[in-house]
Structures are given as structure tokens and as C-alpha cells.
Image (cartoon, rainbow, N blue to C red):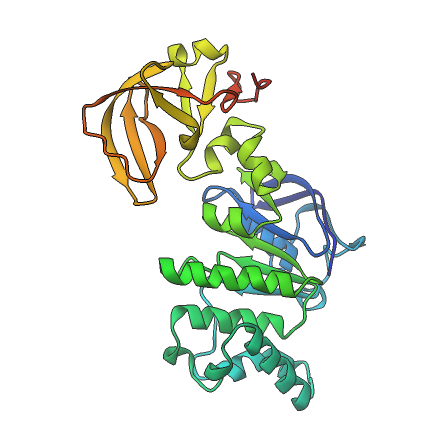
Length: 335
């Protein structure tokens, strides 16, 4: 495993600075997830760790050793891409074994490692198949297996589930979580834009915005105690409701944020509006209410709760379950 340290790491492409001074530690054996909007620099930061991109300035350390100039092959990292990157003319076994063959690993050791990884990923019966004979989820498991057999210090995942359908994303996500539990000696860094992946897989999440780290913390830390308006709006699905102007005045702030599950409908309420749409998902119902703000407020109700378009609703946040932000988007003390 590796303890990874970023010390004022910067990356520029020509005159454009993409990573703007990242200072962060990733602990040995940790599962760290990078999230952020498109173009925030999360994949670039991953490529700096792998050595596929050069660092413009600053230091990257593995267990206290500077690796800025160290070749990717000597860093002890293995990367899993969203495109699988399998050789189409090779079987699953051959794809997983190829890197070890180039490194002159013995045949018996190759066979042992491939079958161990295949067992871990439940693809032992697929080793003789070509990639075109595998489903998307099976191909991604082969790609993960190819990384496992190298016994790396650091696993890097670059949006590995984005090409899979919803059901395959769930099953493969479970496999990756189980893999992390079984491979305690490997540090894992995972890039995604998917909220569920970040919240369910991460030991800690790093939220990036325009090449800058906005906040690092456990999933629940970020969900319950965001340190900026941006993090509050980015973490969570559906996103946090934000109300400004006269709607925020009762709370003594520029913006008040409330999550959908923390809004309570009653005969009286701080706010009033009319239903414009409702989504019944069986386990939950999401009610969209217009009250003159830029965006409708989303209220989550457990189970099935019928609401008709145009129906008037009064609602308020649950006591203590709201977030106050000043005009700069910084959090104010909780009330």
C-alpha cells in the first residue's frame, strides 16, 4: 500500500492551468473518490498520480518518496479505464496475463495470479472467451482483473462504470467494494461524476472545482456538513434545495439550504407554494413545488403520496435540519 501526498501540485497545459495547487493526503489502504463537474481536473489529477501526465510544479510523494520524475512502470500503480482497453484478439486469460508476460513472470506464477483474480471477480468460467463474447460488465471485470494480477500499491479507476447500464453499474460497484475489502493492502483512487458511486464506495471524498480542492471528508461529513455552497449543491441526489431573498430572511442568511428529506409538509409552514409535478418511485415520492424562486423546491415523502398539480402546500425544514450560507457561499453557524 502507499501513503500518497500532494504538496502544492499544479498542472498546466500551455497557458491554461488545470490543477491549481492541490494539497492533500491519501492514507495507506484508503478508498478515495474524486468527484466534481466536467472539466474540474479530477481525471487530470488521477493521471498525475499514474505518471501519464507530468507535474508542472509541486511534489507528489509515495510513502515519503518523491515520484515526480519516476516512470509510470516504476510507481507500482495499475489503472482501470472506462473503455476497458482489452486486446480484442486475446482471451480474457491472455489479457490478464499479458502484462506479467512482458515482465518475464514465470508461467506457474501467472496462472496462479490470474486464477486467483478471476475467482475474486467471479469470472473463472470466462477466461477462455474473447472480449466480444463478454458483456460490458464482464469486460470491465477482466480489466479490473488485469490490474489485480500486477499486485499494485495503488489502484486507479477512471470512471470505470460509466459505459455500463444501470443494473450492471450496481453489480460491478458491489464487486469493486468487495475488492477493496479483500485487498486491504492497496490504496485506491476512483474518479466518478456519479453521486451514488461516490457515497457508497468512498472512505473519503475529494470534491474538486476548477482545479481546486473544495472539501475532503467522509461521505457523511460532506453530506451533513458542507463547507461551501458548491459542495452542498454538488453532494446529494437530488441536490440540496437553495432559497434566497425573502425566502431566506427568516433564517438570517443570504441562502438557506434544505435537503428534500428534511422538509415537512403541514397546515402551516415557513414557505407556501403549489405543486407543479410529482414523481412516485414506489419507495419514495418526490414533489416539485413552485414558490416564486428560480427553481422548484423538491420535497421527499416516504412511500406513495399522491399530490395533484396545482395543489397548495405549506412546508418547513425540520428543526435544525437546514444550512445557512452568507453572500460568498460560506457556511454560517447552525441554528
